[in-house]
Length: 528
Image 1 (cartoon, helix red, strand yellow):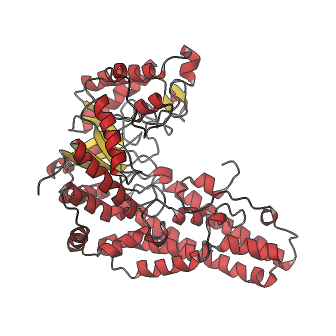
Image 2 (cartoon, helix red, strand yellow):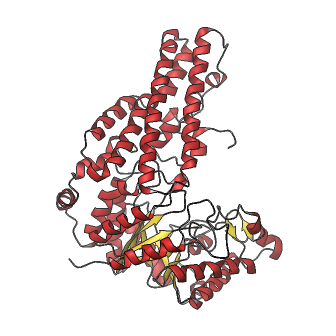
Image 3 (spheres, helix red, strand yellow):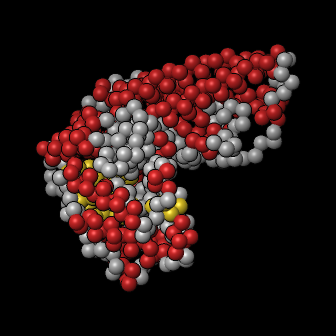
């Protein structure tokens, strides 16, 4: 069947602790290539080997040059172009922690534009890419550098036009890329943010004088994962066309909100975006799978959205046809696979992204920051979800389903545990207080089972580096449950006079269902 797009690929985030194992990447290449995807971007901020930069990706599970050469050859044999996706300005927080780079940082995770050591680093990056990839297309990043020119750059040079800073840096990078024979892709948001005072998704016309300074070998990428309105995408694509024709579009398959995927929302956004791309004549499209806050969601959990997007790119939009084809191809029904969405999205609603699977999981049982989101019955709902997931004959995808089911079993007892504790304590319900420690013990037991299932899923997909962060988080949760249980037991026994956290007046930290993404903001209001 004829393809709608010239380039049609995926982008896998291997920078936020979950560095995909080469074996798993080969499976991904096989799977996506079979579905009609012809390219794969590897998003690696610092998780690849760069000769001359020994701290680059140090202890982060970085890909060796040998691994990348082998992956490149494997992909090429199967008709998939492996495209490097790196960073040459911002999003280098893991690198700038090292002393040898600190003087070459503007602010935060943004490199210092105009600094010659920065361009030596970028030269080393391009040399490494040239040695390991056969593709001569590279995504150079440069997104979300919100404070460019506002830190050390300001101290050295004073208040300069930030467009000029960005363009001068881009031109230096483009010169280096050209030296190694690369055509460059670049996320487009900084042009819009600088023009609008910080916003991206406003279809502003960029000053033609600025647009004219974009190097010839740089193509822009419009990235947008959030809207289900085709007209929104059309306006933004038209604005990109006015700035520089030929922009690529990057959509999103939502792997980054929590443990659970969001196939339903991903499908709605993809359908709207693809309609706009066809209307605007966009020829190059890829779908991103980010790993914000630790990369905890399996990429393979997005299989329904991945499959449906491929069929949409081939002109197939009938949902019944797509669902039937999915079952025939993978030996598991569409409806069964979509159950993986339920832990995060109550009732399977797909109008927006909700990650209750994460914020209720990490919600502290005594401080209860997320208790205000509860409406009642969540524990029972998670128990029912677990039963449905446990009943699926998932075959190859069993580790993903086992992990999701184990997560729901934790939430069956934990989702309302803190609120029940607070209500019993503040009302003086001694009978419930006497019963609660048993529920805490059961939750601890279920959490240990989840940790084992989660580790099995991770080990099947990712390198071990990065999982120590998950063990720190999960181990902290396990210890916190134990500590709260012991204090409840002591209070009920009369050896502890009070539990101060439960006596504070509650304020609605969060309200309503939504996506609350950062672990450190969920577990405590104290400094982490």
